[in-house]
Image (tube, rainbow, N blue to C red; front, side, top):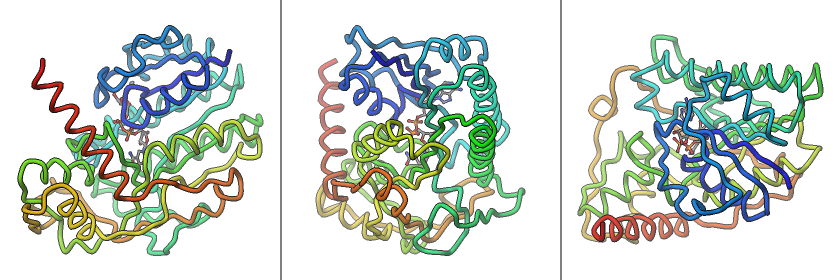
Amino acid sequence: MVHSLVTGGAGFIGSHLVEALLARGQRVVVLDDLSTGSLANLERVQGNPRLRFVHDSITNESCLNELLDEADEVYHLAAVVGVRRVLTDPERTVATNVEPVEAILRRLSIRPKPLFLASTSEIYGKNPKSPLAEEDDFIFGPTTRSRWVYACSKAIDEYLALAQHRRDRLPVVIGRFFNVAGPRQVGNYGMVLPCFVDQALAGGPLLVHDDGRQVRCFAHVVDVVYAVVKLMACSAAYGQAFNLGSDTPVTIRELAETIVRLVNPSAAIEHVSYEQAFPPGFEDIRCRIPDLTRVRQTIDYRPRCSLEDIIRDVVAWKRREKRSELRS
Ligand SMILES: NC(=O)c1ccc[n+]([C@@H]2O[C@H](COP(=O)([O-])OP(=O)(O)OC[C@H]3O[C@@H](n4cnc5c(N)ncnc54)[C@H](O)[C@@H]3O)[C@@H](O)[C@H]2O)c1
């Protein structure tokens, strides 16, 4: 039986990945400090005898090493995420997003095993090209703007992992997630889709930043997890970075309008400036569309869920959460 270690497995994407791995009959150990994740995310699988939860930090190297040694494969998703957390604590972002990756790579250089590394579309920074392909340039803003520390931290992870692949043939797959959304994603850390759904369910208004003409592509977490698992099983994917997400663009204003239509047609939409919405150091990216050619050619990946599917699933999950809160 394959034994997988999932760091950040109590998080939004991680918990869906854990479910997918358990459904394949694997044994799964989750390492999570519950800083942004939650045990409730693992509720559906909590009684599964093939699941073990370890409440600790990836910065605890001896715990990490022990779990790495026991595993046959590793999915590294734990990280400081969300614009607000990154802006307010850049040092913690580096300590959490870079040092544990160095520790993982050190251990895997002694005992190599397949590693999935969660990266991000933020890595392209301000590159105006559209769509963005994996070999396109990273263009970051100045170091006085803390938002870029998240992209830089993930870029360093990629450099280190790719170097180890070149040197030791480490079987590593890098996934650059583009706006993954779905049930269990919370709006507290600045994720736009769950924020808008919360605002619509609360009666509005939906607060759109700036002019709302920013362009994004939203992918259902289930589609993305499917790609992650398939890439890890594909030796041709090792040593490469992949854009993962959807390539169907929508403006943020259109996203707000779709959520209003599906969730609460009487909710208003209002615009707020970036200065009103974020602490200093914020800088937005106007357009982010992935070129999915590489992942399509490697695993024949095609996202199946539409934006409306994602919104309906998020709303259904929020309503279930509300009902169980009221019961308890
Ligand atoms: N959701 C997206 O659209 C998106 C986009 C780009 C990249 N990513 C990347 O995907 C990964 C998962 O993100 P997510 O959206 O599921 O966020 P999430 O916050 O739900 O998941 C992160 C998990 O890591 C855990 N964690 C954080 N610091 C930890 C530490 N020191 N030790 C142990 N656990 C720790 C958190 O408790 C949480 O459960 C992250 O690496 C993130 O950078 C996500």
